[in-house]
Image 1 (tube, rainbow, N blue to C red):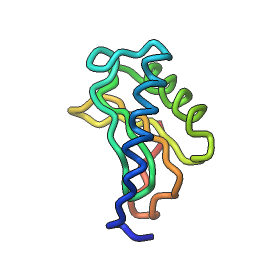
Image 2 (image 1 turned 120 degrees about the vertical axis):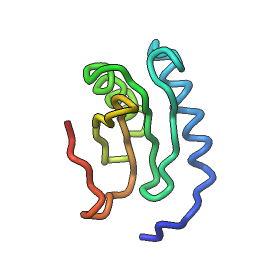
Image 3 (image 1 turned 90 degrees about the vertical axis):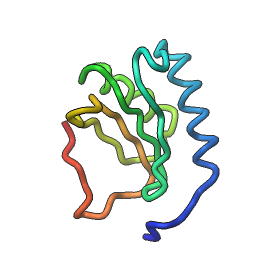
Image 4 (image 1 turned 45 degrees about the vertical axis):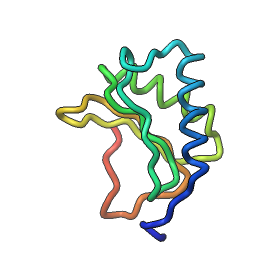
Length: 100
């Protein structure tokens, strides 16, 4: 896998994710802090989520919207809160995070 690739269409997918989150009743800066693109695995990450149940619901929403992207997880990052990520490509073994 080329770790230095750039896929500009992910920026469009980011907009789709923001729209899907809004349609799902999630408000930016209230329910989550950011939606970031993951160039290395062709995916998206929603971060700054307050609790695990909300992160799991957001992950389910992302999986429905991006159903061709088979990889996803929720995790807790100490200072940034919970995050949900969904991506098309697998992470290299040394970079996998444990699913919570």
